[in-house]
Image 1 (cartoon, one colour):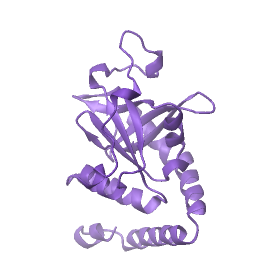
Image 2 (cartoon, rainbow, N blue to C red):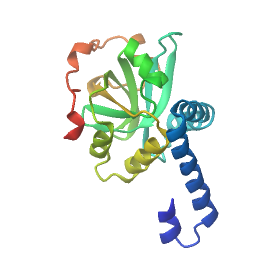
Image 3 (cartoon, rainbow, N blue to C red):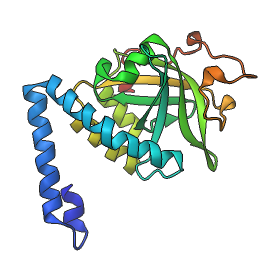
Length: 211
């Protein structure tokens, strides 16, 4: 937050100070009460950040280089969509969950690993089906460095994840870009394509994040 203030003429000192105060407060919350931090951040994201980002991504505007992860609610059975950092590496997609198994989409994956990710493929955004795997043995910080790969938007997202998160956890998605489509229907409702099975995903392994 102090970088833009130092190098961009006319940058607001107040903005840099406010952001520093927010990050300091989040750091103190992490030290004092991870549970309180998770509750605060999840509430803020659920009612402000996530709806805005879903709307922007739905119309093809993606200023932060994010993606949308679609899961099925493990209690309601309804489709759930949440913005996540774009950690695509070819046919693999990596997510660093800020709140570990407290995150709703992580619990959904534990009950049903079939997901879809809305990504830019070519010139358009399309829904790409995949199989998600929780990776408790993976080093999320090392994985995050691997995902960034000198990409500025991914680096910005990584900073936010570290500051907002309380219990980082790696999630791996094995994509099937051959089955990518434009339909807004969940993958289970589409026909004419072979179903993915969890057995196809053997990439996630303990310690992979140190690569």
